[in-house]
Amino acid sequence: MWVLGNVSLLLGLMDSLTSMLPDFPDNYASPKSLVEIQRVNAAKEGRFPDDFLFGVSTSAYQTEGAWNVSGKGESIWDYATHNSPETVIDNSNGDIAANSYFMYKTDIDLAKQLGCNAFRISISWPRILPTGFPNSLNPKGIEHYDNVINEMLGRNITPVVTLFHWDLPKELQDLGGWANPLIVDWFVDYARIVFKAFGDRVKYWSTVNEPTVYCVYGYGGKMVPFVNHSGITEYLCGHHMLLAHAKAHKMYNEEFRQEQKGKVGLSISVPWAVASNPEDPEEVAGADRWFEFWGSWFLNPLFGHFGDYPENMKNRIAENSLKQGFPRSRLPEFTTEEISMLRNSTDFLGLNYYHASPVQKYLNYNVTSTVSFFGDIGMLEVPANENGAAFSDRSTPWALVSTIQKINKDFEVPMIMITENGYWDRGQLADIGRAKYYHQHLSELPGLIAQGINIRGYFAWSLIDNFEWSVGYTQKFGLFSVDYTVPERTRIPKISTKVISDFYKTRIIPLFLWSLNEVEFDINVGL
Ligand code: BGC
Image: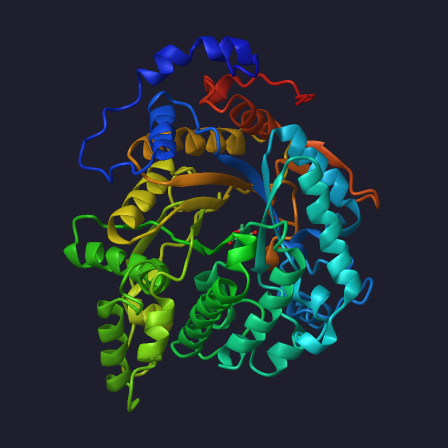
């Protein structure tokens, strides 16, 4: 039977739970301060540290709607969905979405009911600067986010704010978007306006959301903005995002840090690749390369003393480029000055983690005839089965553990926040798969913190069902369902809200006994 709720009962089970935590070897990074020792000790006892941020995550285009309200400019997603609706599987768009522009108080209230002490949102660049350029400031845009941030603070919720979650102003795309080196300064101009407007109250900034995913798909011809020069444009996009992030961080240091005392990081999706044939050493090496091209591509320049792309990645792209007739590598080079700007330019890593990715050799790839990002890796992702799972279960918490341990070992990451973690389904309220997924993933965190890894927050993706990019409204990630058939966009809790609120309110690992064949649940989960 599925045991729901009753926190006091769960508290009583804590002793046996803590005894289940493994012993931790002594050779992990030793804690430096009393607060850190307290954090580690709490985690060893199976508790989340007192200052741990528990939150939910959303993004502007996926939830806000109000696409042309109060002076907002057109984004690349507005343009694509209006002019080529077939861009999205169900021909839908984010014109109204979950109506969060008008319903932000409801959303913040739901987060509060879940027990959140943090909420990650993104700011829509074209709502602040309709053309993308700083001379087009829209006061109504500033006013809107002022209201949202103040509402959160009034409810003791810490805002974590992303500056770019994929909805680029259309006019900047007309000039090449992230392939144009000038975007580095356009982004810094925008960041300055945002830091100045909200930095007195926002202390956690994430400059860019999932740069690698955006660049590989958006600049590899598979997603908006559909720039299609694979093997060239992904790297240009990534190069300029790295520089834009580092330059915005430098600008924050020079102009705002002393007064505002915030942290500037970014959120990267780092997939854990698993060779589909573990007996094949070439495929195992290919899985390591997958991590390098998707993770170290950004982690290496930003975290630690490297300030540059991984050597192996540089060599591989250079060799392939020569074979293809390019006079130089398709991967741009950083100048010495840029390298020193990139080094240690990130106050925290926002880690977006969903599931492990099985990968296989790119068998019929012909390096001389095809220029391609995946050709450079020499690997492809194994296609998902009809359940959307490449593994039999899409919940792979062990891969979250491996990813965090590897990042902690190989890079100098001052602090990690898990800025996204989530599970998609078709939207049923009895979302047992999601409930179980959250329980399994959150349960791993105290063990990692007890190892001395500085994990300071966890954000579930997502608070509400929302516009899921190329798959529109066909995949749902919400803790709350949204009734898209009515103008009120009514929010309804799913079963998974119970798991999340038990974690967030008790700050321990609540015990749930899972027996999926005999699911009993009460749909009025009551938070
Ligand atoms: C993105 C979100 C997206 C989620 C689920 C992440 O790649 O940051 O915008 O909705 O994954 O696919």
